[in-house]
Amino acid sequence: EEAAVKARRLVRDQSIGDLNTIYQRGDHKGSPIGLPEYYADCDKNGSLTLLLLGVGVNYDNWQAGSPVSFSIKYTRTFLPPISPASEPRVSLQGSITYIPKDDDAAINKAKLCFLRRHPDAKLWLPGNGFHNSSFAKFDVESVYWIGGFGHKAYIGDIPADLYH
Image (cartoon, rainbow, N blue to C red; front, side, top):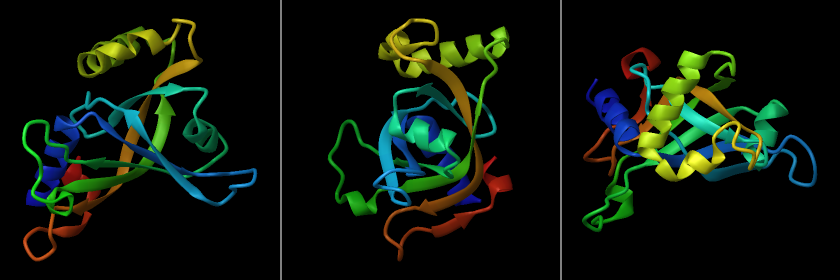
């Protein structure tokens, strides 16, 4: 239970992680790729709110059927870590679904929450014309936690019901 609480706290406190997919075609077919993405913790159940841009390789892979995961690490903003290996991190496996564009209340909630964490993202919001963008949810189905060094912290799966 303690690891689940810490995992949720990490998701809440951070706002950038790596969206991980697998190439579905081309020269890199079958290879994994993970790239940094903004997210916001807008829901009480631990789902992530994403702003998907139609120009990203992870977007293409997901659209082509790739499984997805999202990795988040603790990043100190005021003190250097003793060792990055001692800091907690989590890998969330799950699925991505669009927030329906005609659900004004859900889109507005996502927009307000996302912009609180990422004010610079206002340029990429749906309808702003820069890129084809959409709000989506990353719904967490399983959780793998590394709390730090193995002899001092829990490392392993966290039941999804405890995480949520």
